[in-house]
Amino acid sequence: MPKKSISSIELAAIVNELQILVKGKVSQIYHQEKKEILFQLHAVGKGKQLLKVIPGKYVCLTTQKNATLRPTGFC
Image 1 (cartoon, rainbow, N blue to C red):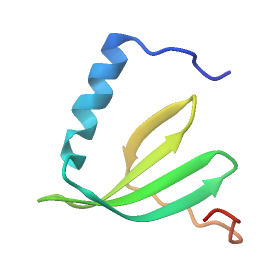
Image 2: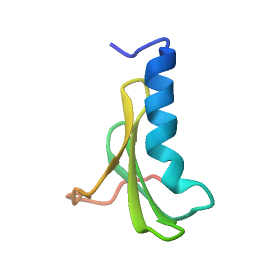
Image 3: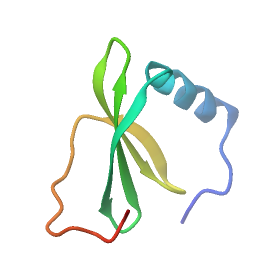
Image 4: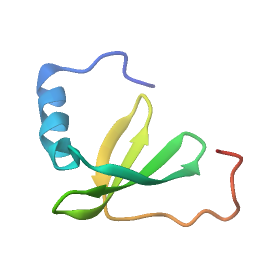
């Protein structure tokens, strides 16, 4: 079940984790599964970073990019 709200502690943790992406640039966007989106970013001084987003569930930095079996219609 998707969350309808986020606590201030959760928000502070997310903001802290994503600080390395400030002034970064999106280089690729991947539609991994039904509702999973993966952003490949180039962060200043950090290089390539992967940001995984599943709306209503979570957002996190990751090191893994799952290979999709076939291309999706995501543009």
